[in-house]
Structures are given as structure tokens and as C-alpha cells.
Image 1: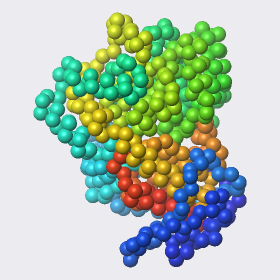
Image 2: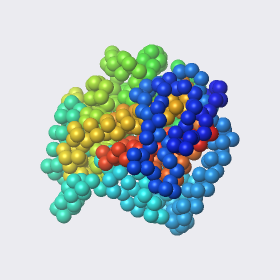
Image 3: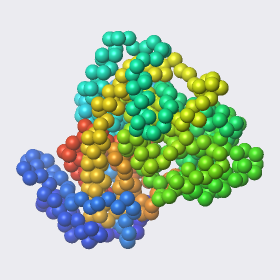
Image 4: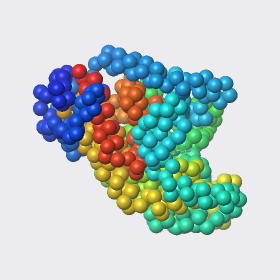
Length: 517
Ligand SMILES: Cc1ncc(COP(=O)(O)O)c(C=O)c1O
């Protein structure tokens, strides 16, 4: 994080609006916090005029955060959350006796205990202590529909009474495939049960088609928990090595080095580095079968592709006979009806969907050109799974795609996200902090950095883990459920309202105010 010339804004005025802050580029003007006035006992909300989000770091000097202040706030907020979640503490004490680490997935773990939930409705979730939160975690970006959507609930209930699993196809699978063809422009589809299964089978398909073994991926990108892709992620700065020749490092034990060595990472947003690495691999007799990547990086906040980069990737992969797999597990269905393919107008050979496809049921899909799916049709590649195309999942996906994630739903997400981006930009400008909001449709983040984040290295260099931990606790203590301990973006749901945006932005403004006071 940038620590340049500390010159913090002055204390809030009676109206709760910082006065006398250094003149910000867009000259923020105070906005009336609440026309009807806040409740007598409540602290007045901090409000600032929105500024169109620039998606770029600020220019000029910025105000620093004092690490001691971060540490003190972290301790206070940590204590506050512990005090208010005794039910989760008790549940954890019971759970850890039989459920390893007290959680079904290590990504759900948290110290001193995870926050256990009981239910979700619309944009909210409730924990075992009865606390309600606005959900922007949304199940790692799966629940863009919001929780317990009535139309999905009805579709699943109807299907439930008709039998839930046959391992034989049902009509819903055809309808879902037809709708995905319409949205993504790829003619052939198969269904699976998780994003990891989708990326694993897509890679197998690419290997079968090219007769090559090497997998190219983007350094730092997550594509699921199977051996082919648990490589070169989660690395700290000192272990990154040379970006021209990143080492292939297994993410955790139990992955054979021979498998890890077959996956090679290249930096995002750098077409030249991609091509140089391909040429070297070809010279070594290890020409790549595929490049698997996200069109915009998620799981590192949000990192957008630079202009021309994706076209360059398409051109390079085509010229070298490499299958281009776009992992749309996070972007598909959340940033546009046709995901990143539509949003960035790209034409990959294969795409992987999961998360938001099933409206909260475990789902995934692979979309392919006719040529790419051919080995499956001839039986040369075995693409199978007992639960593939499960009727409950297909019923949920059908309702989700045809009735819930409509054009109006995407317009609403655009409206809510635009407000979040512009209003957090307003706060950032008012306090002149080294940060910038960046996002697309339902996805976004405030990146705390004075330089632009373009790849995993720049992201990691800017990352302040203490600040991230504080921001999470701050949100949780003020009714906002964000993704615990992960390098995540926010995911909005279509159920979010303008009042929810007001809440989110005022909590953010209060954090920045507390940090700069
Ligand atoms: C981009 C991306 N690809 C693949 C996956 C794996 O999906 P799943 O957890 O459903 O296996 C994830 C999960 O977070 C992801 O973010």
C-alpha cells in the first residue's frame, strides 16, 4: 500500500460529513445523509457525492494508513465479533469433533471459529446467533439470484415430487443446453457438478484433441482443486520467481511433481510473455495443449484485461494450435447473460461454467465448438459422471436461466454495481486514499493500491493482509457478510436494493474515516 504524504481529512462535522478534507480531484460534495433524519441514538452516516469510478489508481499524493491504527482496530473488531457470535463458538466446539476443522471445505474455515449460518432469504443471510447480514459473499459468487428465490424454489420443489435422480437424461437438460447455446454462442454442451470437474474435463478434451500434455495457465489463477490446475497459486512474493519462467509449484501436498511440471504459468495481461513462453515450450518438445484462463481475473479482487489483450490471446493460441479454454466459473451468468464471452466479445474453443448456473445447487457445464466436442461423440474421450445433468439441478438451472436471470435482472445488477463503484470512488476521493474501485456488473472490489493491478504479482505486492482482515471484520460487525479470509471480489445479488447500497457505502466510509482519523 502506498504511504506517501500523510495529510488526513479532518474530523467529521456535526452533520457527519468530513469538512476541510484536502481538495479531491472530483471535489466531493456532501450529500444529505438521510432526508428523514437518522434515529436519535444512531451515529450520523458519512455520505459523499458519487464520482464516476475511474477504475484506475489515484493520481498525486495519497493519505496513508497507520499500521498501528490498523492493528488496534483489528484487535477491537476481532473482539467485537467474538463477543457477538457465541452461538458460532459453541457450534464450532461441537463440529470440530467429527467434521474435520469444523467445516465441510477448508475454504470455509476461519479462526477462531467460522460463522455458522442457518438460512438465507433474498439478499440476506442469518447466523446461528440470529444476526442478519447483507450477503456480498454469495457463496463464492454462486448466489447472484439471491437466496431461496421463489421461482427456483418452486421449480425444485416440483421436480422433487417427480423423482430427484435417475442418471438418465430429462427434458430440462435439453432446455438448459439450448439456452446456453443462445447466450454463449457455443453449439455443444455437457453438464457436470462443480467448477473443478468442468476445468478437469475441459483440459482432458484439449489434450485429446491436440495430442499434447502441457497445460498453460495464468499465474495466480484458481481453476479448482484437481491436480492439473492446483499449480502456481497462493504464492507469496518471495516464491514467485522470474515472470518469464515462473516455476510450477504445487498448491499443497499430495500432488505428484510429474503432474505439477506439466502445468506452466504465464502472467496475465502480457501477450508477449505468453508467446515467448509458448515458443520456448515448443523448442523443448512440450508444446501446450491448452491455455486455461479467466477473461477477467477474479479471486484476486477483480483484474480487468487491458485493451487488446484477449484478442491477442485468441490470435496467439490459434496460430500455435493451442485450445483456448475460458474459465467462466465466476464470470459466466454474473457479468452478462453470455458471461465474459459476450462482455468482451471473445470466441474461445471451450468454456467452463459452474457456480451461478444452478441457482444454489451443485452444477457445472462445458460449452464447446462442434470440433472440440467431437472426441466425446466418438467415445475417444470419456466424459461421464453419475450425477451429471441431475434433474433437480437442471430444473433449478432452467428456472434460473429462463425466469430469474432475465435482461431486467442484469440491468438491476448494473445499476447497483454502478452505484457501489461510483460511491466508493466518492469516498476514496474525499479521503485521498491509495485505492480504487473496479468491477463489472455483479462483481467488484475496492483495490487498496496506488498503482494499477494488472496481474497476480502486482496484486500480491499491493496486498495488505492486516487491512484485508480488518475490512472483513468491520463489515461483519456492521451486518455485511463478505468472503472470509479470501482474496475475493464482492458478488451482488439481484435482490439487493438501493438501501443496501446505502448501507454498504456508509460502512465503507466509516472504515476509511476510522483508518485516517
Ligand atoms: C475461476 C474458478 N474456476 C474454477 C473454480 C472451481 O469451482 P468449484 O469450487 O465449483 O469446484 C472456482 C472456484 O472458486 C473458480 O473461482
